[in-house]
Amino acid sequence: MLNEERIRLMTKMASYEEGEGREHMPIRKYYRKDYVGYEMLKTFFTSTAAFGILLALWLIYNMEGLTALTDTGDLADLGGLALAAYIGFCAVYQIIACIVYNHRYAKAAAGLKKYQATLKKVEKLQEKEEKAQSLEERK
Image (cartoon, rainbow, N blue to C red; front, top):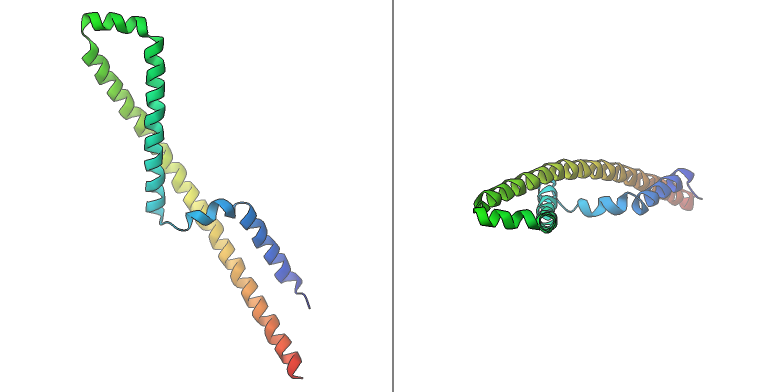
């Protein structure tokens, strides 16, 4: 005999596994600190690449002005300004990454907690069903 509540819960679990669970399941392998740190490290490399591309585009756009700077010798000031811009750019990206990935971890942990609770309910319902079935067989 089929237990409708158990089937409903199992369908809910399968839906979670195919939807949000696909993103949440890999996150559970990490502690929060490790997950956020790993994602921030990836963000550092991508923000460095993005800054490099933006800097190269800016240099190409302002090529005429840069040739005038080489004549005056203010390249050290320009280098210091570029370094300050890089540090600020990376700092903003790291702060945003920390907030975003902490939020994602918390959301995944909450989703997985609900999933585990549903799994326990399904197991209890299955045990109940098996006990009832074994009692019927004894009769």
